[in-house]
Length: 288
Image (tube, helix red, strand yellow):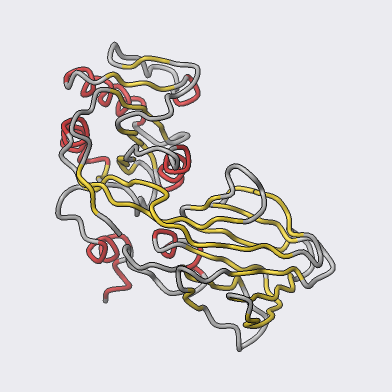
């Protein structure tokens, strides 16, 4: 994982927000005022705003620019992931301020809003490159910064999934699903499956199982150049979700490949931030 410098000059920014956290209206106005004071043009769409969220420092546009200097997120991990996906083809760093629940990807907490915005608009942050997982079906959008999951349908039969790595069959599992997770996503759905936490900077991805109906199914870590192939060996279709969003179906007898790719997203972090300190602060019981 490379650590990059912030953009030398921040002249335009976009704003994405959480759907409905407490205090988001006031935080939006504060962000717009900070952008204006820094001489930065802040853009957003009407879909990101609610009543009362207006400021001279905020300009509404029909479509966000493709390569802004920075993306400011007022929200949780889901909104930060939305921003990272939006700018996977750009060099735009995503600066998250946590207005969600966990906010593992956020650079700062809501109580640090003023100081965080000062750092964001003056380039006082580092940028880390995040890897992703690519699915070989689904076309545009088939890239997960967090995870790609193969899940049994609601009220459907237990899924029967076989999986291979680099052409070698590893096993077959009757389960509620299989999750392939990036290091950034390893503290999400994968962790809930008792999968391994991968430190940021690890190259490779974790594979874990949702409610496996066997004692022999164990999580594993796949090397970055190895390809995971998941095949639906059951009689019903299996849903595919990318970063928690519905992304198609794996039909009976059909297979799909998952590949690791480097440097798909750019995440802003404050200097001195540590992955291991973040784990302790967000999941403190893990460190006791």
